[in-house]
Image (cartoon, rainbow, N blue to C red):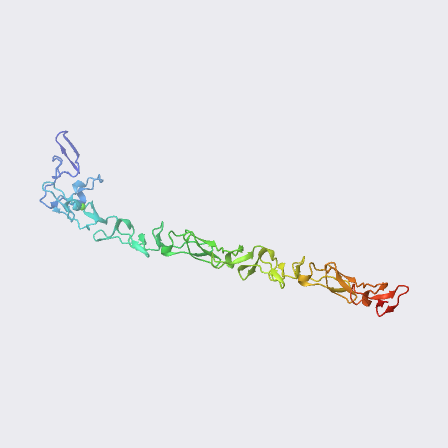
Length: 367
Ligand SMILES: [Ca+2]
């Protein structure tokens, strides 16, 4: 700076920094101040290129020792910045980046490391339920940031580990290692009315089995596929939760069963023992025949209940027409009129009631 004599133009002109008029003479050219090694013109003045003042006239041109961070190449006449980063004299950490500046240098830990630049440590994140990231995968030392999770946990979008909990309709969701993906459907156990189905993906309604009827379901079927009936087919009756084939009774014959026995346990016959006759109400009636003037046949001797069939006739009558009826006893009488009924002790035997003219009744004979 300052002005010096320019030989070419013959004028006194502004010196180009850092040259200046060393001799402070209008006839002297602009020149560098010659200084010994490690000495130079005060660094605080040399580089103030923004100043346009005529400070050269008061400039202390004495060589002074270079300030820390500067050095003076031989012949330069000035103190220059030492590039500590380039010459390896910096004291930055091995995992830091050195940035040179005038008079000094700065250190900054590389991405993935933390510290003041002179001492850098690898970033180490934390992870409550898994393995934490470190280095470049841990941008902010000490924060929660997981790279993988322990069994049963799932890595979330925010890099934390979440305990996996599955959903389950009609039951309790699986969790941890039993839950493949948090929030998906997977059941651990089902409520009483349901059972695990589709490889535990769902709880399905319990459905029992039922032979000869409709099965119970849900809470009425506490064990899926077990036998338990809700109602029975026609001809079967619910006994507890089992359908039993209907069994009727028949005192004097063969009882009906199944669909032929509409009401279990009632009197209902399919056929009757000998001597009995099946009635329209499916009971067996002891057959009793009618017999005017006598005692009716019954049981096996009576072909059809209520029909005419005699077993024995009154004293005044006798069996006739295959025992169908009791006919009035009529005796025979030679030469007179026969006795009948009670007066004829035995049908077709001789017993006269009165005699023809010329005959006289003697006992029961006409003489
Ligand atoms: Ca420097």
